[in-house]
Image (cartoon, rainbow, N blue to C red):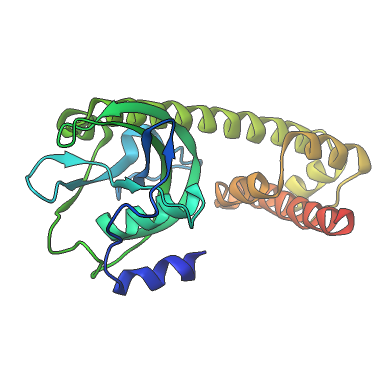
Length: 255
């Protein structure tokens, strides 16, 4: 899908309403809250990304300096995820990984005096383009969550921003619980105790693998391994990387 989205960067933005989706008379629109981690001088053994460490991307209206998140019409020839990515590229010139849907909102368009149904997603930005379809008619600005809440012109988008903060905070809690659970299981194995003393590679017994499989998945195992990078935690990194390979193999066999 990334290549499909990138191809749109050199094309004009979609226009017209002949493919527009409607739900019970409400025009359906979809958009994103693009975000990234701010560059700071922080350094710690286990770095937790807090909401305060994030920046979100807002864009100006085509006709004024009012700020908002990218959004636009969801059309009949695309699914909702593709529509969200397309609109974000066309209006804000960024590409990224789409998160979970933040919710749906009914709002009234001030310019058209009609009701719309808006859906919003979070999107972790992985690439910021220098050229995009609406570069000449919009400004884009990175800012903190609190700054975005102050300047965003649409109240329903502010609610979407609050939903993003709740979603992000909940995900951090789940990841921390997963990390704690797996670390406790690691510490229960004789192999880990030997590896801590001898700094040697260790293996996992069946009980450990069964327990960690209940508490994590391949993506979470990858996240955890990235969050330990010091010499003191090398043995834990080795263990979790081994777990990740094992879980990948299990998934392949099951499929």
